[in-house]
Image (cartoon, rainbow, N blue to C red; front, side):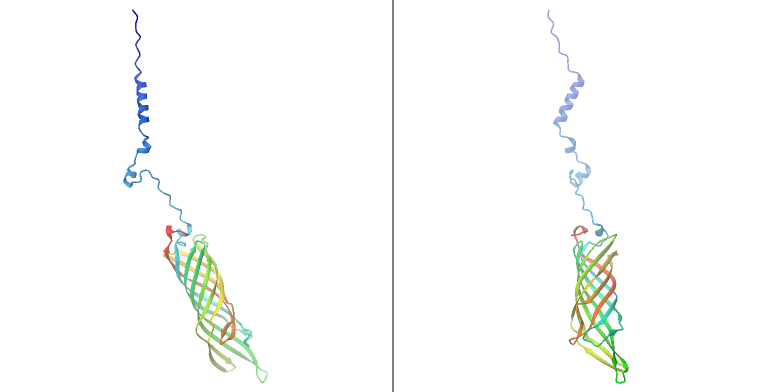
Length: 266
């Protein structure tokens, strides 16, 4: 009698491996479906958080965070006067010291460029002299002292740099000078004295210098070193009197307004 051979049953271990492989193929990867508690709470569901743009060092120091800066400065101004050719004066005794009081508005157009306009109150004290021959051939000193008050209106272009927590700004510009009242003069010849008053004409000039700023409290401490000079001679009643140069050092404080987006530069 012929015997039929029996098929052997698949080993239990092999069956287990095959079933596990089938389940892995049927179920999507856990990484695509798993949600962390934080993702469920926030509703982000695995979305990556955008990286914040780096804040420029100047913005971290509060030196370049606003569009507009308003400030007040004051300090000494040295005045240099040279007699005009239209006058009989041959010299001057003046290295006059004045006091400048300035209101300023600085517009931060770009991170490295700003435009500044100012209103500066100041005064002039010029003293010019000459020697005049008398009939006895003696020389009498002829002196005329001038006092004038004025507003100066500069328009300035500044280039801004930010080294080590400071703002340094070389600048150049022009200004208009508007007199306040008349030019008062005191004339002395020997023992004779006379007081005169002249109507003063507005004038124009140019300037250049270096500004600085340092963060302090809600605003900035500012400093300004500049030289300015009239484009023409100082005139009174149509007569040219002197040419004027001015060197000043002023310090003050400024506050920023209209904060830029993201606290940085445009």
